[in-house]
Image (cartoon, rainbow, N blue to C red; front, side, top):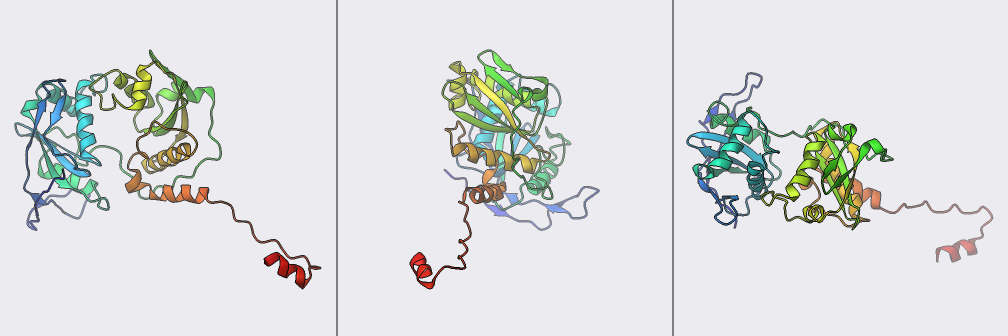
Length: 328
C-alpha cells in the first residue's frame, strides 16, 4: 500500500543556514502522521505501523519530544534494520546519542512514534532535505542526532569513476574463512574499510558479493552473528541459512576503494560479473545501484559486447569477379 502525503510549501518558512553556507534552506510543510511503534506479541520483535511501500524518504522517530531524523533509500528495509540493531547488542555503538536511541528503542518501543516527513524522488538530492529537517526539528540540540548533516557516507560527485583492475590480488593475507564458530580474519582483512568482498560457499559454490564502509570485521561479524539471531533482518536469507547449516564461507577482498562513489560502482560491477557465471546469494545489484551506478551498467554492457573486427583488406591481385563472389 502506498503512502500519500499532502504537501504545502510555505515560502516564509526558512531556517538559518550554517555559517559556511550562503543559501538558506526551506522545508516542506506536510501533514505528518505519527505511526505507532510496538513490540510483537508473538516474537517480541519491534514492529512499526508505517504502511508498506514507502521507498526513498526522510523519516522521524519521536519519544516524548526527543527526535531522530534520518534518510533512507527503502523505508521498509530501514525500519527492519532498526529492529535488528536494537536487539543485536554487539552491533550497537557503546556510547553516544545513537547508542542511547537504540537502547531506548529496545527498552520501550511503545513510547516512540515514527513519521514520514518527505518522500524523495529518485532524481532528487536526498541529503539537502535531510539536513533541513534535522535543523527544523532541532534533532541535534534536543534529539538523538549527532550532527546537522545527517549520517552515512555521501557520494562524492567529483570523485574519479571506477575502473576495473586488470587482476584481483588473491594473496593469503587478503583471504579468510567464515566457519561455524565464527570468522577467521587476518590483521590485513579485519581493519580495512571501503572494500568489496566475495564470499564463496565451499559446499554449494554459491557466491555473495558485498561491500562495507565500516571496518571489515564488523560487517563480516554481522553476517555471522545475524545468521543465528532470529531478530536479525537477514535471518531467513539464503546466506544466513547456509551459515547456520555449517557451510564454510571462503572470503576474498576484491577491491579497495578510495571514495564512496567508487565503492558503489565497484560493488555493482562485481555483482554483475559474478552473476554471469555463478549462482549468487545476492538479492539485488548492490547499494543504490539503480540511482547511483547507471554508468557501471553501461560499462558492463560495453565489456559484454563482442569485438568487431575491421573488414579484411582486399588483395591487390584480387579480380573483380572474386570481389563480386566474396561480397555476395
